[in-house]
Length: 105
Image 1 (cartoon, rainbow, N blue to C red):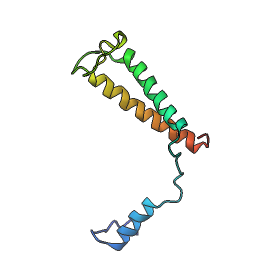
Image 2: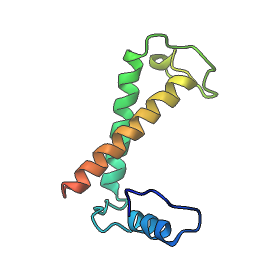
Image 3: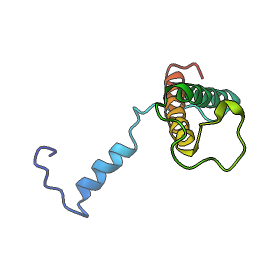
Image 4: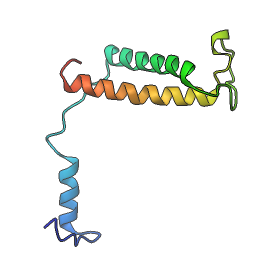
């Protein structure tokens, strides 16, 4: 059935195949929101900001943040904030999924 690949729009077999992919019982449940999950996400974002503060080769390029910053973040602008927070969320999601799959959350 799958080796022919003759599915057309509205085909019942395609709909069943998609519903099986969505309702797979082998997918582990993830941890629901809790203070420990938020603490992990906050820690990952702070780690990413600290890493990005020293790892970004050309800091201060791009638009500035619209708020006042401490002297430590003098060259930390909007692109740096966006990049480090994106990395922090990716890192945090991976750690939260890994810990919940291991049963530690």
